[in-house]
Length: 535
Ligand code: ADP
Image (cartoon, rainbow, N blue to C red; front, side, top):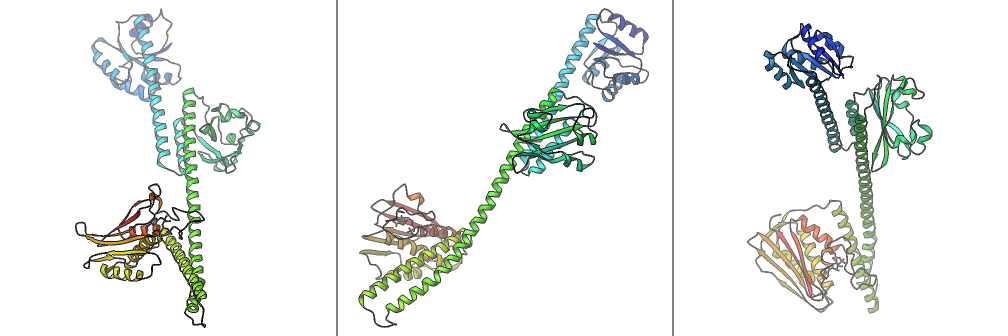
């Protein structure tokens, strides 16, 4: 053990030397603080025995300056009997221990110095761990805080460089081919062009190209004498003396490598290498997270584009289909009415079928058009005073005598119904659709259309109840989905494309209302709509 004794008093110094003469401790002496600091700078001392009153410093100031201006070494204060109080304060301010001059023997002094060294080492270790934790915390925060790969990587490189006071650094990441590792970020280069001069490393043929071989992708690799060794042309140009290369990994996979270099020769302690390896793993997580985000974002953009294309296609197609279909229906209608000459009953019948199917087709096309608009959020809602009684009478009249089934249509609504501020066209569409469905899916029995004013809640309720085929419990949650039909087989009995209820539900939502359904297979279904009186 080498100890620097800082003591101006000849007698006291002699006493200490004598006390330690039987031990293995080597002693050198300084008489002033200034010379003590110079001697300490050589780094060869394990501890300091410090007298607090020197020709060029006094009391606690002596300790303060030694700790501030000198390297971090354990200090044991030497105190006179009458200045013990100051010595106690010195311990509070960072000295490891104090001894009273003249009251120690060799064994005691040796033990005090040994403990001081151990305690100091433990403290330094703790400080170092704390510093590492702080660095890792900062890096974690950086990763959590941003999704932009470039800025995250730049900040991590900065932290990593600061952690060990490195002069320059670079990060190589896998390129698009997933094969080559190229420098993507760098810091501290005297000539930034140099950063780009580093050659790309191949992930698979690394052993052939790098002096570290495959080890480079498995663990940190250190080179301590760059200028004397072969290779590393670019780093030599930058005046680098030592460097470390650390793999950037996530889930066992190598995503890159970072390199930190120093222009003064340096050694790499195992703890430091460990810390940098951890930083490499954190960087891996950051890279993976950012890449995933970028992939998802690109996919979302693609999907949006595809969706837009699909919507445009549907809109154009629907318009293009409507026009000829209207012409077909128009001519069939005129022919049926005998405008182009007399026609027989069979022809009448056939034309009726053409007309009927044209109407169905038009309905489907309208449905697709509406659904596309809904998806594109291009549905506009008008707000007007709608006299409910009048609207219902109008709807009722469209069904009078038009049913070709043995069905009883019952209209149950009071003569006095309030006006509702809503979109009349949409409400009409909703009700007609529910009634048409009820008719379509009911072969016998009745359909009841009930309307009432719920005065308590300020809402109106519409119910369309049928005695038709009903819907099973499993199917019920899905009937409002786009293109969903309970029976989607090719041989199904009922026509339609499965858009009606999807549109109805969306319209009701836009009108601020709610739609519910209850149904029992084989018994019938009831659809209930509630709408606010005020939109
Ligand atoms: P569609 O054009 O097939 O009628 P809808 O969206 O209007 O499409 O209805 C979706 C599915 O819900 C229908 O295929 C049918 O299976 C079921 N459905 C709707 N209304 C009724 C009803 N009143 N009774 C029984 N099933 C119904």
